[in-house]
Length: 417
Image 1 (cartoon, rainbow, N blue to C red):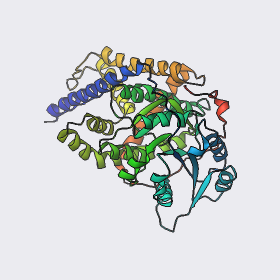
Image 2 (cartoon, rainbow, N blue to C red):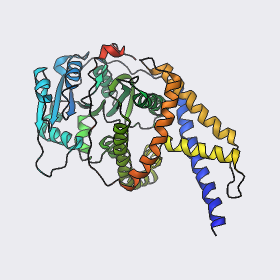
Image 3 (cartoon, helix red, strand yellow):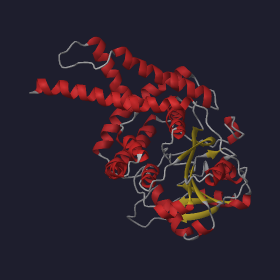
Image 4 (tube, rainbow, N blue to C red):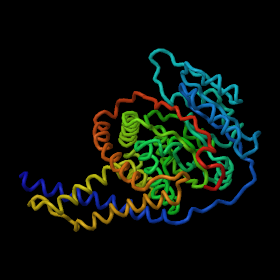
C-alpha cells in the first residue's frame, strides 16, 4: 500500500507546486508594466497619522519630525503617537516635537501588543475619527516616510479607494546580510506581487505600516483584529466586505530591518504564527464568498492565505530538481523536465535583479542580495513548520529599533520614487 501511496503523494505535491508557480508567474509578468500615476487632486482630505510606539526613544524623534514636515497642508493632518506602556522618554520626545501623545498603560494580566494600542487610540478618538478625518494612516515608530505620502493618499481617496498601501522600503539594507535579505525580498514582492496585482485589478496586501484606511470604512469594519498579523487580518476583513486594498507605488515608507539573525527569526516566527492564525480563521469565509458571489478578489485572498509562501515553494522546487537529475527511484515520476523547474527559479532571480535596478534608492550588491535571500529563505522553513504547530501562541515580542536615520541619509529626498 505504501508503494502505491508514495508516488501519488509525490505527484500531487508536484501538481500543487505547478499550480502555485503558474499563479505567481502569471501575476508577476504584470509587474514589468510601468506603474500608473493617479490624477492629481488639490489637498483636501484630512488625515490622522497614528504611530504605535513601545520604548522607542531612539527613533521616535526622527519619525515625528519627518511626519510634521510632509509636503501637505499642516492644518489637514494630525500626528498622534501612542506611547504604549513606555517606561522611557518616548512620550516626552514626541510631545516636545509637536505630536499628540496618548499614553497607554496596561492593567495586570491585560493582553499587550500593537493591536491593543491601536484599539486604545480608536476608543480615545471616538466619533472624532469620522467627523474630523477622512483617512487614518498607520506607522511604526522606526519608520520614515517620503514627503509626498499624504499627497498620494489624497489622490487615492479622491479616486474612491478606501484602503491603500504604499511602497514598503528599508532604512538599512546594507547593514549586513540579514537586513539585505529583508530589503531584497521586499523589492521583489513590491513589484512582482503588489504592483502586478494592482495592474490586473486584484487586491493588495496591507503591510502593517504606511497604509491608509478611509475612516468611514474603518468605522464600518471596526478594529477587531487581534492576531499577531493584524494588518493581514484587517485586509481579509475588508475583502469579506468586498473592499480590496489598493497599491501606491509612488510614496514610500522606510522601516528598520533587524540586523540580528536571532531577532529576525523571532520577528518572522511572529509573522508566520499570525499568518496561520488568519488562514484558519478566514479561509472558509473567503472561500464561501468567492463561490457564492463569484468574487475573484476573495478567491485571490484564499490563495494568498493558503500559499505557504514563495520561500517554501522555492525550497521544495529545488528538491524536485535535485531528484529529477540525480535520483532514479520508482516512487518519483517528474511531471515536468528538471530544466523547466530550474528556468522558473532562474526567472525569479532575474526578477529580483530587475526590481533592485528599477526600485532601490540605495546601491545594493546583486550577488550579496541573492546569497542573502537564499540563506534567509532556507531559514524560513523550520519557522513555518514550528509556527504551524504553535500558531495559537499570541505572545507579542516587539522588535527593538536603534537606527536613528534621517530621510536625507537614504538619498530619498523627493517624491515620485
